[in-house]
Image (cartoon, rainbow, N blue to C red):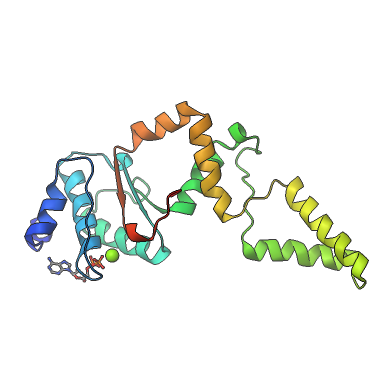
Length: 197
Ligand SMILES: Nc1ncnc2c1ncn2[C@@H]1O[C@H](COP(=O)(O)OP(=O)(O)O)[C@@H](O)[C@H]1O
Ligand SMILES: [Mg+2]
C-alpha cells in the first residue's frame, strides 16, 4: 500500500494529502491526474478520513470509471465495489431521480429515459402501426409520436441533469441528504464538464 504513495511526485503528494476541502489539479494528458485522484481516494479511505459511502467520484466515460475502480480496488480489497460511488454524471443523476421520482410527479422506480435508439424505436413502431405513405399520415404519425413520448413523460439524457437540479432546488431535504452523505466529491476529466454538471 505504502508503495503507491512513494511513487508520487511532490505535486501529486501535495494534492493527495491536502486538507483543504477544495483542490484543483491542472496538468496535461498523461501527467498523472487520474493517478493522483485514485491515490487520494485510497488515502482518504485507508486513513479513515472518509468512509466509502461519503466519497463520490464523477467522470465521463465508462472506460474511465472502469479504470478508476480497477485501480482503487487493486489496493483496497476489503471494500465492496457497491460501497463506493463512482459514476458518470448521467448515471448518477439517473439513480437520484429514480429514487425520488415521486417528488417530480413520475412513477416510482420507473423513471422514463429514452435514449436516441429508444426514441427511434418508438417512432419506427408508430410509423409501422400507422402504415404511413402519404404526407398527411406522416404528420399525424409524428404528432402521435410526440403524444406517446409526452404521455410516458419521456426524458432524454440532457433532461437527467436538468431534472436533478430541479429536484435539488425544489426539495432541499433531498439536497441536504446528499450534501451530508458526500463529504468528498472527486471529479476526473474536469476540463470537459459544463456549468450544469
Ligand atoms: N508519479 C508517477 N510515477 C510513475 N508513474 C506515474 C506517475 N504518475 C502517473 N504515472 C503513470 O502515468 C500514466 C498516466 O497517468 P494518468 O494518471 O492516467 O494521467 P492523466 O490522468 O493525467 O492523463 C499511468 O500509467 C500512471 O500510472
Ligand atoms: Mg486521466
